[in-house]
Image (cartoon, rainbow, N blue to C red; front, side, top):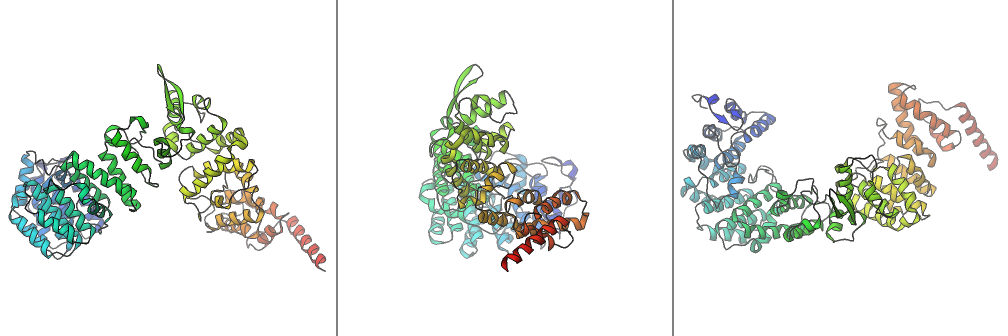
Length: 624
């Protein structure tokens, strides 16, 4: 590597480039973590979107030296080189049809790499597919090497069998065709799109056609674009789109092509993405596609990530996008004008019956009175006059008791970000009184709400503190309590929602179950976390053990107590808190006494032993 350059006089994105040569050398380190760190550091310093620095050109030369070597890290050197040449290849792809803006540092960088064309051609024919794929990416942004580079790319495509490499070669031909305003490869790309059965290759060919042929419409290659989004190349094999792992990279590349083609293509690609959301695509694909739709639809330009827009604030095109996203359950990370929950979005948009949170009520906002949904008034009232009251007076006064209960339960689930926006979260302390105020009139709502919670929370088979969406068990406790107080039976399908804390309302709810079912439900919960070393569950199990005083439940608690006593002694705070409770229970429950006597390291109280023996003697005399 060169030592003649005074690197401290050169600039990178964040200051002097003194350390750049050592960082580039670290790309070849034996340690993988060191290589990763070097790559990510350089990725944020040698270029930015559409910008280069005085260190970019000499750094590109050093990267070419790495690529010419036989060491590890050549693939990352090629990825970096593509971005250094292009000034962020994703940004350059989005402007592929517009041409480059003048830049002295950018021109110097490309000139330095053009002089090393043989390095890139060598990588294009390397034995390692990842190197061939990355070399095509670099060549895509060097039209100065055409027509020789085009001949080599076409030749490589004719011989290549690896799908990610074929996809990279196709995209490179598309980008070069766009830069040169040439449709020379249109027939080749069309043939590739229709003849290669692999979705990754077909999709890449379709994207390339969108760049070189103004007559190709996104809707005409929609199936190929969906196949592109669904493809899952191995990490590092197709470096287009920066993520290096589909579907993130696939969507980013598609968005860049949409940007390059302009409004008409954006609308067509938006339609393709909306169809993808409605399809059987994987959750990972749908999550990424939904985020892309928010970008294409202008949501991110108009709203902050935490904002929730009123339906009337959406444009017609935005409403179509919002409805497409909202019809699909389970999409993560929605924001930028849309509520985080699909249930909330559907109610807000009229795709499902509105609930109390969507009810329009009056609110004196500054000098005018407005009609807003309950959720918006709730947040606005708290922000105008912060209060420890969970539900502000302007909301409470305009809702019926049942509406208040429903609104509190939905807010406990995180509806419309009420809790996070006001920093006042709904707990059981607010819900239990609301259940009392609503009375039996809430029973029908409670039953349907619990059915829906079971469906959306996917809870069966988890422990006493399930990894459920935030607030599910808080909201469920209110609904379960409403059913119990109405005199109705609790459906077995709701068992995964049964609470063990806080004691009010947990004890009242659990007591409404038949004895055997209650014991079976609690055993299923606590048996999931049977590890004696984990004593976290004691504070939940011991206070309700009297509701299901079986030997096997007592054994679970005692195993944890024994393990803790062995470490900290019988005087330990946790042991001293829970063991007397179990001993007292054993005095009236033989099954608990059996568990206590069978547990080594603990001694039953004399009164419990005497009561137990008396019980056994009586049983013996009865048999005789």
